[in-house]
Length: 539
Image (cartoon, rainbow, N blue to C red; front, top):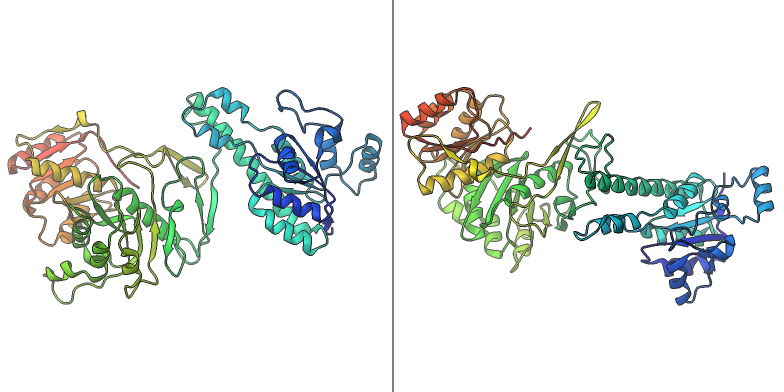
């Protein structure tokens, strides 16, 4: 094997970004250009000498451009093994000239079907046939042919051609072939997914999904694990993988992305200014306020010890006043009543839709400012609007797929089951606590006031243990609070504990065989209880 010189290239692109400059670079190296339709027209208008593919094949483009490059003189030129005498003989007898490079990208199928007004007929017309066929032919024969399917590669390819007298190495052609097959695989997956959706099929017999690599990560959950992050390029460009990094002297880790995603998801559930602090994907603080600063103070007070090294997400542009409280903690320290020195402060990641009034400079000026990763996630979604439709979970030997947990409850199903109904203030508080419980690992118990979490017990094998942890975290603030449980109570024990702790109202899904035991216990202690009719397990 050796470097292969490029003498003839076929260029046919839907996305013409950078193609004129790239082709001019090829021509300067003595490469003959074949092209089709709109690409040939754009190149000629830029002063590039082009031979139409129809002139080369002796066969016109036809059927509104559906048939242009599907011809033996094209695919023979791409697939011929140049060192095979029989292939060479066939090429000579049929007038097939070798094509050494294919520059092709595909009809914008994904962008087309993303438009709400797109019809099936329009989608079908944007299924590229000739493009994938050329990509596959060239990629298969990468020992002799270079296939450039990504405009981001134009500069590197030109640089190597110039450095090697118009030739490309085996390694480069092989890497380009891999990229081409990745493109056609993603393209076919998008088409299959669209057609399945049009047929109303939620779970196709063969699941084909594709994600674009964001970056290789330093490591996975632990240093000995390899990891990479990927973006979902099919839907809305929302979420942490699409966030813009504004600051930080190291890249996001696998765990950072998981925790930032958990914080972002919870913060965007609320319409009021909200601040969320996450540790190990669980909320250790969540607060609402008239201002973002008030929301942050309440969030931080929820569990300042656990907040160290946490992830902060807010649902409003982060202003200077809030940033100063994050860094200096003046209000928190003024009201601190704990034993000994107050806990230290440090954040791994901050996520906000934007940063205003010098807030970014304040965060960067903190003693830990160089290490904190500051992200701008300016998502277009309304509060509570689903961020994704499907969730995927790998298990040994397979994959689990489910729809996203994108609801809280059916309003009509919300039911007061005790003799005493919650007061307006209690109802506001249980609604708030229920949102937070949805985002905590099961088994989960959340204790809260109407605007802040005071204690969370999450990820426990026993709901009793989760309740005990939530009370310990509350440090006396459980008295007068409300309780949310992500799943039903099989017995009355949690309600009895809630009564002893001074909790006044409870929200839970209901649906246990012995719901009557919990209801009777609540009535006996004057606790108001609301059933949602909807569970929120999170494993």
